[in-house]
Image (cartoon, rainbow, N blue to C red; front, side, top):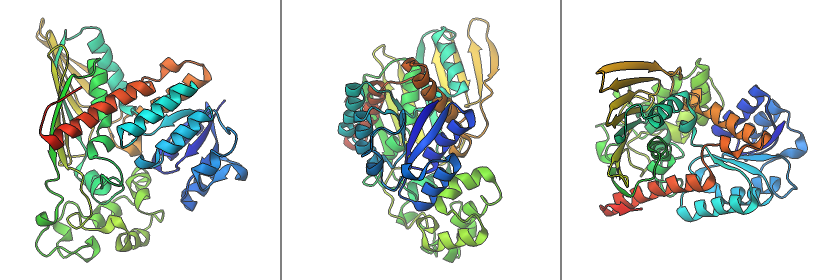
Length: 413
């Protein structure tokens, strides 16, 4: 059985650990987490011995190698040091996306994995869903001829933007990363995977348009609990988090990021004093709430990716236009239009309807962890769909898009 050390016992680390327990193919034998509640909870759930429970990842990685692999699910800016140290100790690594906030750090992580001959699997979970597998197979078999254009829409969700990118941990570029990297490195990687090629040129436009002080409604208070216009605001923290109570999926996420006390009193206490109770127009956020990326490939074809807060949190929507047909997909169902017969085939990929982290991103989370564990157990690294260097290459497209956005230019790759 493959053994795992979990570094970061937040929602992502917990999800992968639970999948390991569920399948029985892997076992968590060590954990490092600064939050005492999360640390104790994960250790108890997985029967981790006390001597392998650590407050700081440095203490875990100061020991001889305790497991076959390390799951690194710390905050974005805390990936570099534990990833490099774990690679140097010989751990295979499952690394939460993004690899790192800077290209320099991501290069160091990829080089450490290559230098030590360990598997580095970055969590590009969208590659692993049944929806993606089906779509990729159709394109690779030439079902619609040459792919000429891809249009891709990432619907963050109005409340998810408020939760994660206005009030939450990913609200600030300085503390985390640009929103395109933190949220949509998934999407650019996925487009490149579907196309089967890296782009040659990238442009991008995006701004923080709505979640700004000047958009604040007249009479709004700094906190939702004190606000006389809260009931008319779609971003009400009171409505969002109280509505999670009684729903196990929503209590797991997003509510667990707000409070461990899943009662009405617990939610009110968290909103009274914590960051998630703030007015969305009175936060310290600076990441964009809308962005468009355009990519041009060596064969003259193109792709666009639109990332927006102002939609429902649903599966990504994609249209792929080819010389012999087109495919329109909603994350679950694919509609394939054959130009020769002028007929449309409908393919249900059996992906789950819920696209959120609470349900494992349409099956991608579970399939990724399974592939990673099997790759180690069977010495079959090809089961992981991206090497460290391949992940680095798609991350570089994100950084190029950000340079294009800030400079107003087209960036060659």
